[in-house]
Length: 112
Length: 114
Image (cartoon, rainbow over all chains, first blue to last red; front, top):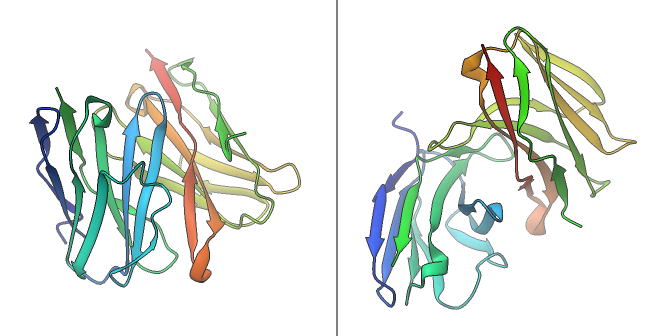
């Protein structure tokens, strides 16, 4: 199994631009999580899906952030418009049921 | 008060010593507890999980859980420089729809010096 796949691995963009982060979970996993990690705030849960349905998006910082999961093998996290304070590492993770989570390699986002 | 608390460190120990990492949590209903290791620039990886009070051992790692005190710890015996990383404590909380969702602490940085 290839594990959780994220793209791009690095993204540098200018303030105001739209950013789309992508995630392919492990096949057969029914939960998908999006996290943001910064030095100041640690690892924060943004949103999670169960069977492609968003369950809790209370961690999404504001309306500029949106996430979709159109099918079991793909999810996106979009930031529009991006701001410098969105600079962070964004992780996607998946799991089967209530078992351990598997994290992707992360996307390092820099907004200038 | 953050739901999962960890000392940020760094915790510095000599090679061969026992490293003790601690975590407290606020939700008494929490049922499962995890320790993840994160190397710099990498993603978190699970190294231990524990559900029941007491100790759970796996190689050089021992997880200890005390639900009455709302405390979970990780002991690393015979610490090696390769153990130098940030260790994240995660506690599953009961969420909507009957699922259990982890809340992470901010992690403790461990440095093992030769």
